[in-house]
Image (cartoon, one colour):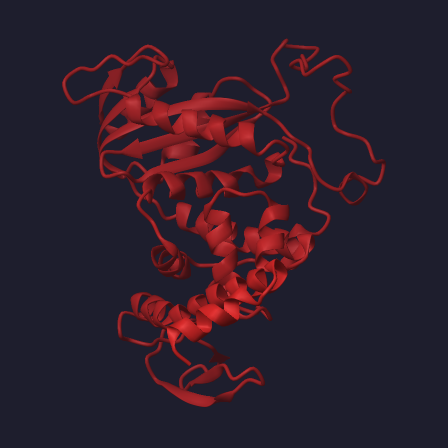
Length: 347
């Protein structure tokens, strides 16, 4: 059948049939591309040396297949069996690879859970677990970030959110705060009059584009010296200079680690040569933009969503191939039980 005959056949199809045909062609193309993408991801993960994920031995042999055709491997040293997807976002999944590729495509377009579920052809509940499996891998990667050279530090606060199933989280079915009634106003603590329904986010970025975002403290509008050291201590081992706002605790941090320190007024666009805090201010604006669009993100999952925001900022020129290969490298420790009846975020 030549091209003209195919065109004539298409003329006889109604709109529903055309939609089904277009969907089939897109899925077929994705499925054909998946093999090459998956091979690239595995090669990037193991660097041509296939090792046991349990004991890191290279003494590996094939050990049959699972019912779905996945190759099993056996470690000759620790006698553990595993697959090439062990510890990745594809571990223990029953969904075909095509569904995961489609989900990455729609998730990269910054759509909500329902739109992702509709596009990938899964339930809303499944869409939730798929998203958090990907976010779990990104969050684990965030724990390994190391900043070097000139580093910009700053903090920001967002309102705490208790979104979720309140019955499972709290048998009394009560929020750990009073009702807002007439709009959202900061709940004041009886003793020290500090806002107690805010979440402090610590942010840092170096000139190589490495980004570190973490929930630092709950129930306050400022960070103390102990919290700052705890949050930033592990990521500043290779830093030489700190650029911060005027918060006094950053001076103490720079002295303790022997770093050069430049202080700027909050939200300042001032520059002193190559020293400024414009990059971290830009990241904060992106966080606020994301939070405005995705209303209702539960604060107990905020760390994971911060990892997603950091990934999208750092990898602006990304495509499906790059997304899958990158995320496949990240260690995934997702367990479904972790997200069932998760307690409120309280400090």
